[in-house]
Image (cartoon, rainbow, N blue to C red; front, top):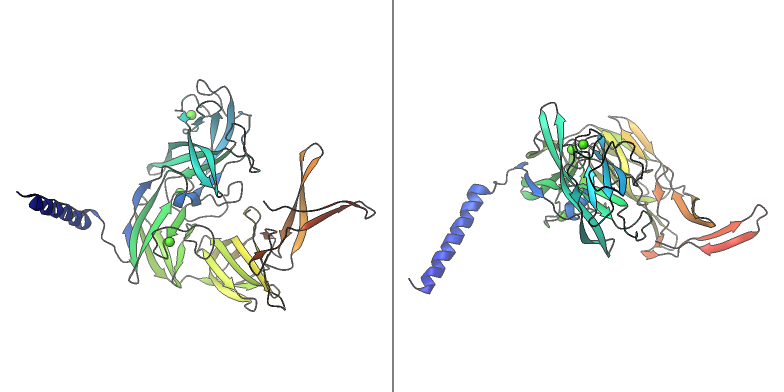
Length: 428
Ligand SMILES: [Ca+2]
Ligand SMILES: [Ca+2]
Ligand SMILES: [Ca+2]
């Protein structure tokens, strides 16, 4: 056989194999439903980044731990939230760092398999950082119908809570799922990639309650993602392009609401058009346009509400403010803009009830106070705190027609009004 014939034969085999894979192995794309396949995640980032939650600061107090694995002589103790309970974890300084989790919740760590950390470099907040990665760690979760499994990874940040480089120890820890499920379905002639993430590590997929939060107020819940724009990625920046949401009962897609149904084993998903029960939201505010994102146990909402619009209808459910941009246009046509702070703990929540009205006073009037904390003897940290009418918190970065204005100034006076110090705040 000539070389040319061998090439044709090889090409035919590859093409035949590909067609066989396409017809027999790959799932056909169905209208409104799909099978969900498990996708393992080794490195942090990407879609799974939306399901990070940050652990409270470590303590040296191991009161809830009866014993430790051999060699744990410099332990720091954490609590990891999973399946609506807290698991004790000890992290030991050393080379390598080692973590041990009380996976069977018996108060002992000596019966657990310690996990060695691995140093990874991750581009984080536009800088290359070294972090310590652990896992995957398997959690078996007993329930009424048997045992479910959740797999997690732990990421020890080599920066402290204030963003400074820690000397040796990974003090700040994030936990994230070690896998997610994904598939593709068709709606109205268009194909969408979808995914679900077991963000509360209980081995099942249920609508968010919005009550469990991590230390920055990020929801500790399952997540749903849909690639609205078809670019193959799931955007997750809370902007109008965002494609991830806490798993609710509903998703809004091309102005139509769809009920999200997921099988008990998490292997099948369907989106069914519905007309949900609704109530009215009334916005009590002055001449201020609002762009915002609300998380919800019903349907995630991205809203752009001009100053003159004072009410709108939303599906019945509980809502929590995830992001706000408040905009005002002055008499010279300049657009002034502030965004909500990256702090989700104190952002307001509200409920929409069927055929009833809920009032919300997001936006002006704004109040500015300061937060003062002692950093060291003789050193205080002073930060401005800007809040809106519903108690929502904003960043003090003010944009004037997309240009960042200088940071606000501060003057400290005594009881008689004598100026003791005057300076400008610094961003960052
Ligand atoms: Ca144990
Ligand atoms: Ca779950
Ligand atoms: Ca996308």
